[in-house]
Amino acid sequence: MSKHLDSILKKVPSATASYEEVSRQEDAILKKIKIQEAIAKKVFTKNSTERIVAEVPKALKDEIRSFVRMNPGHTERSVLLAALKMAGFSVKEEWLIDNRSVR
Image (cartoon, rainbow, N blue to C red; front, side, top):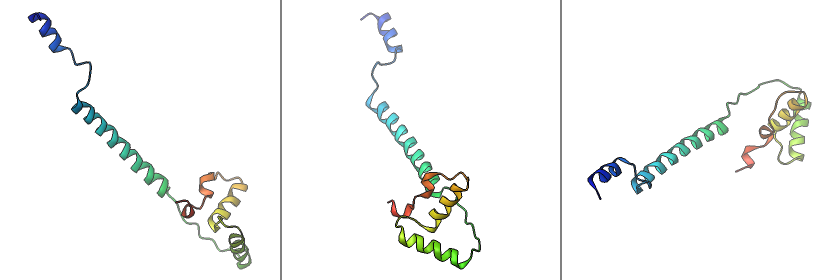
């Protein structure tokens, strides 16, 4: 090749990436994915919950317990959230699922 053509070709980046370059890019992408998964896991598992403490008549509490016993898959929490949803509160469907049984 001529010296002029050789100097031009040295300045042009390669059309294919080197193994090291591809490996670095894959590592960077995998690292970003792991970070996003960790953030998502933290957000979905810890979904900032709070406790509501309220006194209710014993008869009502017993009725809720009886309902939960007779309806597998329901918890006191899911019963209360369903009632709040029926009352017009914004309750997501995923909140009604008992996470302890979904593993």
